[in-house]
Image 1 (cartoon, rainbow, N blue to C red):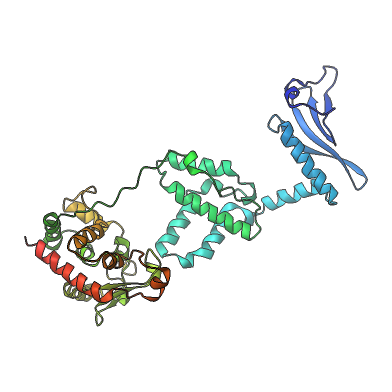
Image 2: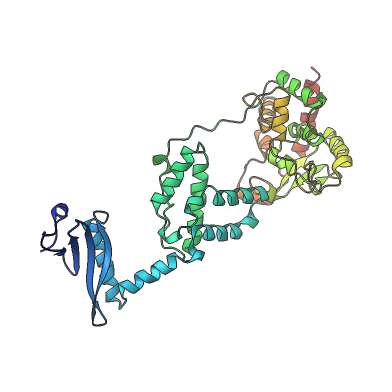
Length: 398
């Protein structure tokens, strides 16, 4: 007679015996010992010999799970495979170092890094080494949703919940790589409901920006006339309001991108957030500034080299730090905020939305248009950038 789930807790071993077997069906039984431990066993015949396979301990393995495990073993037997041999092979595979999560993750990273910027590649490598460390030595085959859930909760407990969506996405891609290379059969990160695991993330705040002409004029005057910070920091902060680039694009700017003859900066796709080549028309004031900077930093490939190592770009956050030195807090102005300042005021001054958005390197138009017309609105943008530089000169004097 088959076992019933509600009777298992009450099964016991008679005092005059060391152990007793309670049979379920088709070779599955529960071995109950005198010390009250209850162990699942599956008895089968292979190559004319009877063998027994341990399936785990009750109640950690409930009746339903034990039956499923026994059924999988019977399916292997039907294929002529000894389930004990299969288990040993799976254990051997799981213990193979090449299948450890960190090994697989690094192979995926090596496969992808050429498509990323140097900073982005370094950031993901750091996350694999540090944030995903708890998964590192586990075989990809044995990682389940519980392991990933624990990792997400650790990020939240550490005060870095904003990393959770990105890291979960990376884990999902790593498992996609593992699936493609037959290193695992499942992807426990796919479809994992992060919103049900950690608390909702706060809404993303826009970059603080000054949009009143008089206040922006005072800031531009302070930037252009206050001596503080290093030469590169000072000049970079003078440049960023006048060419609309993001802070990271400014710090990574190379001399090879600057075309003085065409009065343009040509930034290759791999350096841009949207992975598209970007053209920046240069006002006369900007050309004069860049020529002066080149006389100082022309020894380096970078327009703004690191003061300790000229082969590297200047450090992150130095422009934001100089804004703080000038008395502008994070809730008033950020280095990234100059893009918002330009967008708001240029719209108010009647410039077409498409022209402004193109200069900000935002996606506009169809994919075909973006792919074949990298110089879209270029004539209008040249005029706009000169007018904007003239406008900044005007308001900083008021």
